[in-house]
Length: 454
Image (cartoon, rainbow, N blue to C red; front, side, top):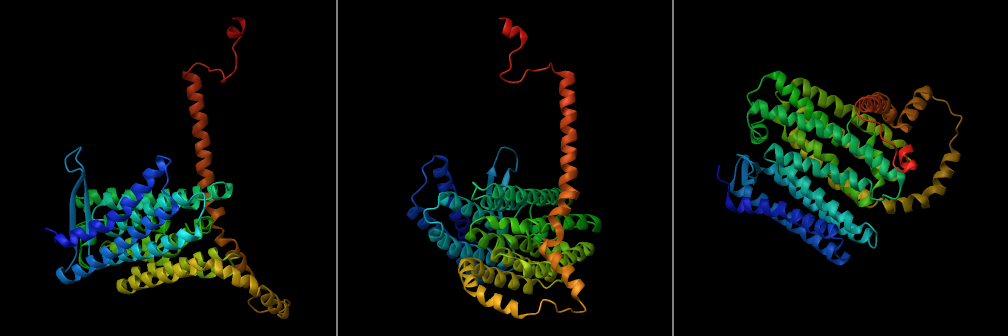
């Protein structure tokens, strides 16, 4: 299908604006010639404004001139082999709306960050990662083939982990960033596996076959087992990226980053990227009943877990993160039921509301300190010896919520420790094989008997 020229121009301009910003700031950093703060802030604001304006115009043009989903192709990025990597965007009201939301939210965060991180040592590094994140989110929102989707997915995950480790002088921050990156690797592996199976099943890497079908209609001719496997892999990828159970343990660790990055990642956009992907792949989910049941169960249990855990958090950012997780679980549940319009409205409203809460978190902390005395008076007035029929269960639930579902210890015992033991065993085997085949090598700096004689 030949794309409408104004629509194609608006879409590529919207994606190019943050991509150019990322290239410019990243190149300046690599050359150790970072731009002054005033120029970085102005360029970031301009790029986000251009992206938002072009996507709004694209949405208007699409509403006037187009019906149904449209595939915009911009040629091949690589021609080293036949076909290469095509740059394809899938355009409809859903993708353009989410892209415009992404540009608007990141524009607000960029303006807030310009002042919040003023004279911070990592100011330029923060905006490089923010530009990478925006580019990745727009690629995820508009992806028309597997390659574009996976590149955007990787951009989002990498920038997220690096921003968690933004204050790299703190050992705990770096450790938590590695934990986040490890969960993202599981998500990425599931995404890549689903992409390979989809390519084999459809005979093409174009997502228009998957995302372009009518609701309830079979977009891709595949058997039920294949559709179920691909859908389950997508759900695993979404669970890792959106912190659904059992991967929710990394969410409080991700709060180590600056408040603006927490707002855009774990309050408004990144945590909703998985929900958006499920919403786009609704035709596939409708072919896999078991996968829809799994998604609904994960969404419901995650919502219950988040609602319970957020009530006992001792810091504002963790409390807001688990509150956001509750709504993400409900959005996933709505998608599994088939309430697609409601799920998208819920996503947009929650992203905007949670952004405001995260950005105002420092003020909330100030208000909480001023209220501490009144809260202590109220707690002292309440009898601590009162016993209710549900006292034992309440204490158990409180302990469960305080320990955040024991997810870290469970994952350590089930995944980390077996993997570490396996790696240690393989290391010993490798050392034994190398020792059996290769001659012994003296440690660096040690003199042999022959060297001493000489």
